[in-house]
Length: 435
Image (cartoon, rainbow, N blue to C red):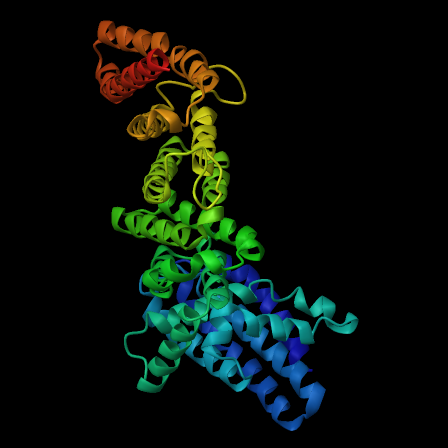
C-alpha cells in the first residue's frame, strides 16, 4: 500500500537528512525529489476514496508532506532556497489538496486535526513516523514567507492568515509558540531560523497587544510560551552574527511584552532562574528593570497619600517583592556564599543596578509610603551588599598588583560593579538613618 511505502521511505529520510551537508546534499535533495512519486500515489488513492477512509489517507499524506518539508529544511546547502525550494513547493501542494490552510499551519490546528484522525489504536504507531510534523507546519509557512517570488494568490492567502492571527490573541499565541519547534532545534540552518524570527516579528502587533493583553487568559499558554522564549534565548546565545542576535533579542522583548502584566514577572523570574549564562541573566534583569520602571510610573499615577491605593491594591506593590526576590537570587545565591566574581560580574552589576533603581524610586515617594521596611533594609545591607564589598575590593587589589592584560580586563569589568555597589550601600544607609 502506498501509505506503508511512505512510512519506510520517511524512516530512511530521517536518517539521511542528518548528513545532508554540502558534499552529499545534492544527492539527498534528489532523493527528496523522489518523495513526490509516493505523494502522488497517495493523492491518487485519496481521490478514489470517500468519507472516513479518504480523511484518514489525506491525514497520512499531509503528515508525510510536513515530515518531508521538515527534513529537507535541515539540508546545509549553501543556497538552500534554490536547492530545496522545489521540494517544499511540491509538498505544499499536497497540503493544499488535503485541505490545509496557512491559518491552520500557523496555529498548528491543521496538524492537530490530522493527528487526531489517526490516533485510533490501529493507526497510533503510524504517528511515530512523523515526529517533525509540527516543525514542518511552521517551516511550510516560513518557506512561503521568505519566498520573494510567490504568486499574488499565495501572497494574499498568507497575508489574510497573518491578519486573522493578529486579530485573535489565542491564535497569535498559538502561532508564536509553534515557531519554538524550529528555533529550539539544532538541526535547521541559521538562515531558516533568521526567517523564522522575521515571521515572528511580523506576527507580533504591538499596538494591538498593549490594548488587550490584560484581558486575555494566558495560563494555558504559559508553558509553551516559556519554551518559546527559551528557544529564542538559544538563538541569542548561539547565532553566528550580531544582527541575528539582535533580531532574537528584539523578538524576546516583544514576546515578553505580550504576556499579561499580572504574569510578566513570573515569566521573567522563571527565565532568570533557568538561565546558566551570566550575560543572558544580566539582559533579563535589565528587562525586569524596564518592567519596574513601567509599573512604578503606573503606580505613581494611581497612588494617593494613604496606606492603600484607591482601588484597593496592596502596598508595597507586587512588583517590589518580585524584583527584590530576583536581586536576592543573584546577590545571595541559594546554593550559599556570595556570587562568583569576576565570572558573574555582568549579572551582579545588573542586579545592583536594579536594586539602586528600586531604592531611588522609593526615595521619591512620601515618608508615609515607603516600600522598604526597616527589617528589609537591614537584610539588604548586611546580607547582600556588605559581604560583596571586601570581595570586590580584594579582586581589584590583586588585579592591580598582577598588572597583566587579563588582570586589567578584570579591573575594567569590576569597576562599575564597585561603583554601583558603593552607591547602593550609601542609599541604604541614608534610608536607615532617616527611618
